[in-house]
Length: 56
Image 1 (cartoon, rainbow, N blue to C red):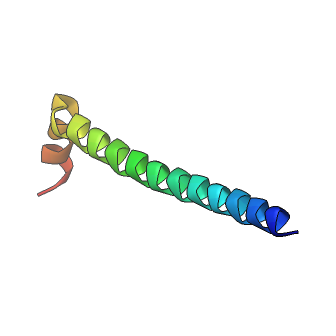
Image 2 (tube, one colour; image 1 turned 180 degrees about the vertical axis):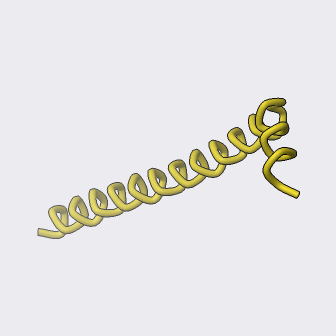
């Protein structure tokens, strides 16, 4: 009986850690993709020309 409770606790903890890892990695990937997109737009000459044309 105690062993079954221990296994349930261990499996639940493992699933919780996997879920938190999934959330953290997803958030980090999202932030890095935004940074990459901004860097790409910053160094894109066509986008810079577009901004100079339409923005004061």
